[in-house]
Image (cartoon, rainbow, N blue to C red; front, side, top):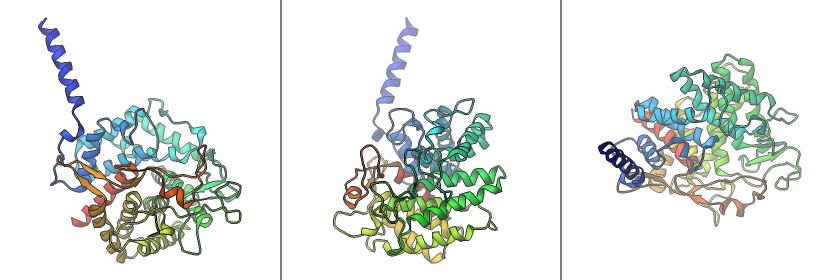
Length: 399
């Protein structure tokens, strides 16, 4: 009888603990911002597969973005619970034979590659062969990824002939790191070509920006009939592209032919980002080529992405050190304009565009009204991950 009573009491206590609201748990305000944001997310989502507001298991880019940032926090500060949180997602999703829950190679979606980046470090630390098998599986997608005649990857099989700036972040850093770690120097030229080809197709000579995407076949309804480009330069698309450059460049040897082209593209992005930085807040607008216009708004995910990219590009010598001032202004402005902290220390990021795309079943036209009317929400992982990474760059500077 006593054992039954104890068991019932234990279950009741467990249920009460699970039911406790996130706001009842504390985050120490004296910790660095990268740690505070990480701990806040871990409180909001006790299981790492729940990140990105997920009610069920999902293998997509947002988990890799946030958990990769959290592993960076672990690398800097050494808190084992953060490492374990990231490994728990990988362990849940990756099976002993290397297959991945909710991943289907033949979808040929670059979005499904990004989360694989966390597996490099997790395999290093655990030595579990299933992670190496999963890395090899994801790498094998590139062999069959549909391409245009110029070698540019389609963003997804369901989007024929389309190159999206987003897709460069989803695929290229993984591709470059896999080549680096597995001694495949012949792959560097392909990685470089993805960046250069996408830049050529999306570049707008009127303002120096890059449009969200281009349909090389010029048949999609959102595509310009002459250039194939989408209508606008979306802030987060440019942010993805900038982050892709600074992350992939780390793994491409300095002597590699064509690497200087990536540095030139990155330099141009830095020029445009500096010009379009809001002088009052230090942030950037949802639609870059309509900065300051009616209905447009300062958006947190692209702002975090630009700050991170500038910090890292200056630190690694990819761009002139004068851009450090732009990054610092952007970071301090981010804290002032996009960060809220509740009474328990939980950190919230505000004003993030939930999602924006082009085409699809529920058709997205990519016009100005479309971008400024997409859902805005708090703690979107596309803002959270880059903010953590930007904070780590800032904290590295302080050291």
